[in-house]
Amino acid sequence: ALPESVVVVLFGATGDLASRMVLPALHEVHDRGLMPAHWRLVGCATDVLDDDGFRDLVRASLERSELGVPAGWDPSAVRYAGGGFTAEDSGELPTVLAQVREELRDTAGTEPVVLHFLAVPPVAFAAITKGLGAHGLADGARVVFEKPYGTSAESFKELDALVKEVLTEDQVFRIDHFLGKEGVQTIYVLRFANQLFGSEWSRASIDQVQIDVPEDLDVANRATFYEATGAALDMLVTHLFQVAGQVAMEPPADLRDPESVIAAREAALRAFRPLDPVEDVVLGQFEGYTDIEGVPSDSVQDTFVAARLWVDTERWRGVPFLLRTGKRMARKTQRITLVLKPPFGPLAGELSEPNTIEICFAGDGEIRLGITVKTPGPDLTFSPGKAVLELDDVPGGEPISPYASLIHDALIGDRSLFTTAEGLRAAFAAFAPLQGEARPQPEPYAPGTWGPAAAHRLAAPHRWMLGE
Ligand code: BG6
Image (tube, rainbow, N blue to C red; front, side, top):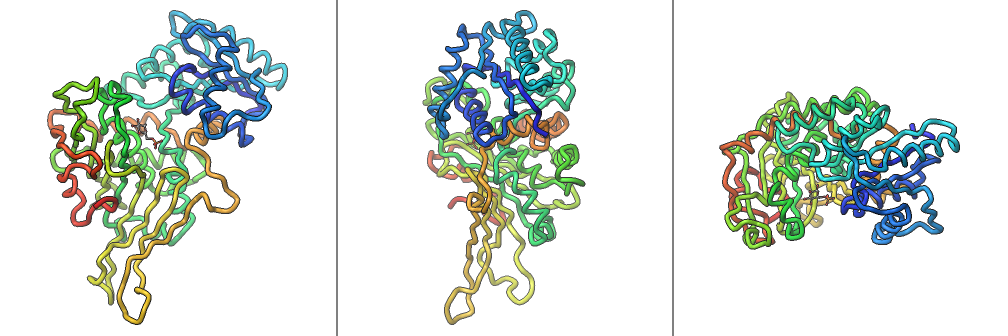
């Protein structure tokens, strides 16, 4: 349930992530009437600013955002606490937080929920978390961590151990914004509310699952981050694995009970077989990557990854999950495709195209069915048809952006769509072989294509449903 009052403490408040994503999303939450009746936003960063200076930054961020600045905007609920925040030096935060809590106690008559939002680079996670413990700001609070939460099995373990010294798991909200996308959230409704889909959701009917996230963007403006990360770490072990978990999970006992949804997704992630880097992974690097300023000329960083993941459950035995993403590819889209087995019976062997269930999770989301129909006309011949349902067109609804959706969930204390320590531990365990000695060399691909030719073999006997 939505608390009576809340203080959102935004760490990294003057940074790029706060300005591009978090502040507009908070506004979206507010705009949709999903904010508690009484609220304060406290920006926290090292910059020397006063309240008005920070309010100007918030205003500038909203001006650039889709919703713009709300009419009659009153910034009095926005405060700023400078001086940074670590265990050694608490800066202005404890004082400002004590003030706004008291204000809210007076107006709302109850103790506000405190939501610490860490929109900071991962290197700062540890220092801030220790600070929360050291200065008594962790008790009863909820803490939102941005990704990446760890960059390997070991660094994940280290970070999580430190976090657990200060917080209990149910206080921790680790964001993977792909789980907040409308198209991804609709998967289990599609499946559990519609027998038509639910009954087909297994190896009995499905040949392959493809989770495909090609991007046409360049990495030139974030070369330093990218060179240290690469496509597999940036996207595969995080977003694509979580989406795969969402597709692969067994029916939770209760879809409205976060613990039961979490348990189902964790069980799916635990069933991921560790990747075989030789048989099941193709890495790529687009031609021209090493010419980017900040990228060493001998870089072997991957800008493309295609992987064949096996989910060792009874439901999915023998069904490859093909995961693919990369930069500078032919187009930008985000799609899950369940490739159905060919029919038996009178039309066995006659159809050229497999039937598909597709979930596009870019933007507002879309469900598409690739079905075979009689080619209209006098003859009995067959054509692939497409039925498209745009989620935006569903009556009575209004798609919510992933960040706003997840912030709302954090406000009501619902962890269903956040990654958990156990889920990430399992994800890094399946990913670990790709960080070892058997990691393949990235193969070159031309910008504007679908990646290295070698990736095609992973999809056999089908093909990647997106692409040539
Ligand atoms: C981020 C990755 O987490 O997700 C980026 O770091 C990627 O490399 C982005 O481009 C994709 O997000 P979206 O919102 O476009 O789906």
